[in-house]
Amino acid sequence: RPAAAAEATTSSSAAATASVESPFEAATSAAATPASLSPSSHAEEMDADAKCAPHLVSTAPRVDYHVAIPTFMRWRPAKEVSKKRRLKECSAPFILVHTLAMLSLHRIPLERVTLFVASEGELDKYRAALRGSAWQEVRIVISEPGNKNSRNFIYRFFPAGSYVVSMDDDLERIIWKVTEGAGEVGTVCDLPAGSLEKLIFDGYDQMREKKAFLWGLNTSQNSRCMRLKGISVRNGLVNGYFNGFICRPECTELLRTLQDAMEDAEFSVRHFAKDGVVLRYRMYAGITSPHSNGGGLQSKFEKGKCPEAGGRKAEERRGALELSRLFPKLIGPPFARVNKVTLDVTFLNGNRPGKKRKRPVAAPPGDVVASRAKSKAAGLLKGGSAALLQRERKRRKRLRQVRIKPQMPLLHEEDGVVYKANPKRPGSEAHKLYNTYQFATTVAQARKLGARKIDIAFDWSYGHLELTRLRIEPTTWDCEVRDIFGICRPPPVPLEVANSDVVTVRVRECGVAVPGLPVPREALLELKSQVPGLKDVPDEAWRRCTGPFANVSMALLRSLLYWALT
Image (cartoon, helix red, strand yellow):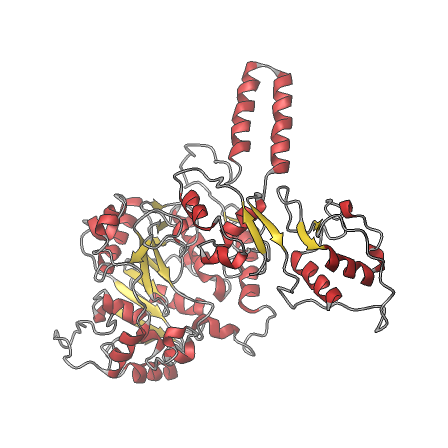
């Protein structure tokens, strides 16, 4: 799509579009991200709830608004800033092929947009970079250095009561969920061109209706975490890459005071603490890559520029800890996430001031059985049967002990596998997906047929996937094996009489439904010859929970076997 070729309306000229495409517009058009799905061509495939999305049906009146874009070092060519393959040959300014391209696509008037830069030198570089494009006359204001300081400056820059829509300078597009499904093609699509302004008007209308002063989009780009309808009003993160707020510069308690990496989480919780509500559209999400692009906040943590150990993640954790001390009723203690990109802040679902909870807190996901047992136990208590209640409590305890937690095994592409008959609920998306890969014989074949990492993890943990052949080759080289015997190998252990070709060995990734890995007997005997402490271990001991490798990872076992054989 020709992203930068938009009809820019300026205060000095109400004029028309350029008839000759500039070099910047040509580069922007070539580097534009292909749309994931065209809503107009797939209208008949939309769910009924998706057809009621705010940008389609909202009748919110037009309001005056400002678009604020804090930016730093994004005047550089996109090929220097981004690692994306599609921008490898793009010489246009990074901001021109990202946020400004998106605004052009949605026909946002130029006079509503303001860029906030850190210094006079940055201002000159942005002017030079945007020269010859449709955005060469955009207003640029010098704010203050630093992400936190720049956003505080923006909050105080506009008059009280002003409606401001803040965007990061690396925002590529906004996606919208149109159908339910487990990540199938067509689940989400790009927001139709020209629809953004209608969403902005609806955001202001929703704030006025719910007495809120801050709104944003879904915090996750994963379609499974998005919904077809609904606006969340609970305590939670309003991402800094796209949000709308009503300025209240007199409320100094809303200004950011903590680390740069935590500014959006702090801004969100400060608004909830004051107003009791923040809004998040559950059907929309923004597409950005904050951790992979150079410049911006990430430039602070580039090699040689951050004196603190750990960089951005370390600063996030320090900020999360301080935030939990400032707002103990709204923010819990931080904890490390599996995904390193995910923020370590724990938002607590507090009630709105003056509101009573209408229903008790539901059981956490995956604990539905225990929740039902708890309800049953409460009914028994009313009946007065102490013996039945005690028995029910013991049953609930056993359920908690055997509850399966999915483990992600580090499998090799050439590992042999066999899948059991389809155990999923007929008619469900999981049942359809399982049918596509259940006849695979290797991990590589299963992935080629559609099995995702999360599918392999669940099938492995619940015993639906069984390993038939273990590839003796390291999956990771982050392992050092030191031979304490030196170059002289001890005499080999005499070969035992083989009852089978493989020995089942239990490792750390084996849950309650997985007995162990099929290790070739020859490889195991070679390992026993190199490690004297293993020579007296019988076959049946390898599969026990107290076996020699029960607390050793699968990757380390492969490395040891490979070392013994080579």
